[in-house]
Length: 310
DNA sequence: TTTGAGCGG
Image (tube, rainbow, N blue to C red; front, top):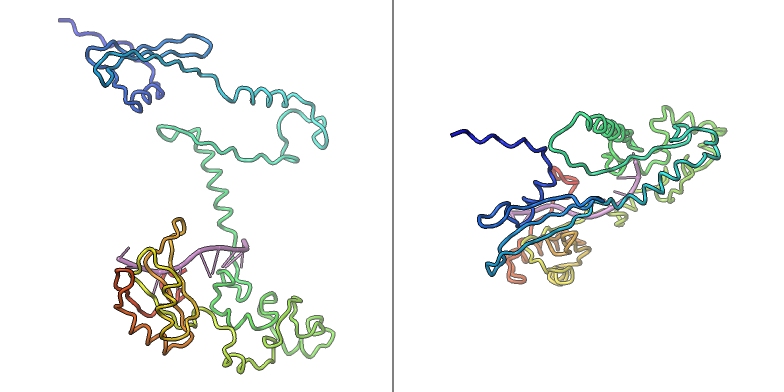
């Protein structure tokens, strides 16, 4: 018996593979003629397949696939534009962009490839370099010059209240500047070197102690806040406020929600005016049922003091 | 199960 010689290896065509894999059409079914393909010319390909329909009858499926590119017309117009004579600053130059007048944008395209090819590597490198350039943009705190955002500055409370601290950084001798009436910063008065308005209570020399005691600017981290967990997904602020305001004045109710669906993620924060009230509420509401669930109430640890808290 | 959004630069 002479072994049957392999047919000449066909060039791999991923499109053909895809057809077989994607569709629910079996490649070759016993009792059915094999699939046929032929070119009709004009970019039209005809695929004839046979299969059994649900009733068990043999059916012939003929598909005509036109390979005409949608972009053909666009490209024609583009090609035509490329023949135009240049004008303006580009006048007289040969075809194609010139670096002195034109920035060539990146052509973003999705590519399919089985593996990495040498051809792709330079592009990847370019992008990586660009990203690196962006990342190396330095972040400097306007207050203390540390490498964090101003809002994250650990000395914010202190430095923000000092006019000029932000832009001048560490000025060596403040007393010299004050003694010199010709110094523009001094001549500008108490509104700060940058010309930015500073409320009188915040100006240098103002007695800030009283303001602070009078319940001046109090930020979220200072408020006695409870974390409520085990909430049902349809919990809302209204209900929580109602539950908690029995024990004292509730300043804020925040419900953690899914950004897309808006559904409660199961926890909330309730801030009270007074720590005592908050503590009372914490003890009373903890373990209380709400919407078929048993609430759990604890002190919230402010975001900034939590590891990983943004 | 369970610790908030967003803004810069």
